[in-house]
Image: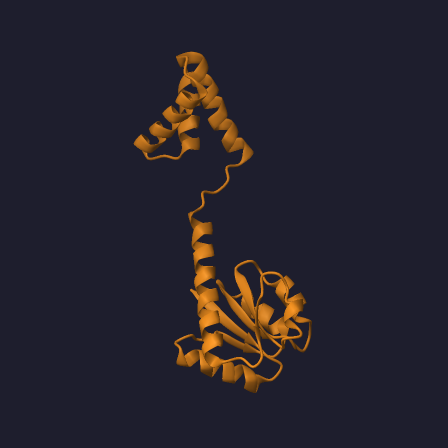
Length: 182
């Protein structure tokens, strides 16, 4: 579940933004007056957005954006003159900020972040060099002993893996063990 952290130099401003978001059903996880306290909150949460003023007490907003992990995005509330210096990946929203614009931008950013994180979870993990070597060696053995092409050997390992309910690395290891035990 994505979270919202609000960072403003005055806590009253952060509370006003929290109230505006709350009327649209968006709950703020934390209200902060310094970037360092926002960063400590970020590391306790799974993902989300940081709504930040271009004036932050203890560091420049671009530094805060740089220190944010990739599972957090920044919504920068700024003047039209400062919007050009918005860091890459941050979404600027210029003053005067309409409540409707603030809420819809925050909702859009949360939806994009959720889609991006789902894609990352779905993507298969990269095999280590050792795991890839097991598969390559099993393919080579199948090609030599059974006169298969590389694609046929790979497909055989893949199909055997699916049939047995194991991953391809384990299947390749079993093929190697069976052949070398003979």
